[in-house]
Image (spheres, rainbow, N blue to C red):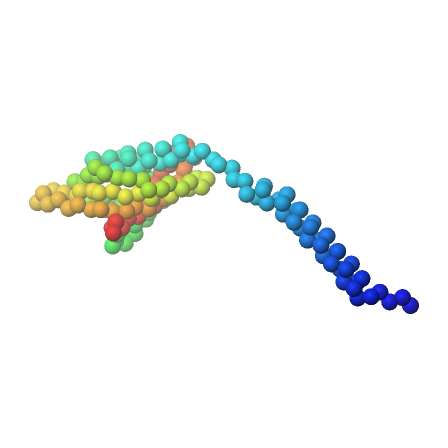
Length: 171
């Protein structure tokens, strides 16, 4: 019987391990560059549409026009105002907006988009503004500095509509 010295056995094992390691390294070098590539999608047009929708939505609120306001939101819209219970059906939202627009005028002269993230037919719009709310009963004006996080859905016509509208103080 021939005995193979441990040094030969260890050498053969090391060679096999090196071949495995080299194969893994080669595969990694081949595969990784493909994984690192990202297909940059130019969605600047989509972002412009979302900003335009936001601007028109703001104008509808400034005019106090509930029907116009509804043109910029989805049928399953959710309103999450700071310190309020969420409003998640159109009848409740209409009642809330009718009362609000009857009691107050509203202006948003300054607003800024911080970020818009788009994934397929969903978008997140993070923005802030300074708004003024004026009581129609006593002309008291209150200034609000707020930050918003809105979620938009793209409908079957390719239009972006507000799905979730949430805000908090900008502090």
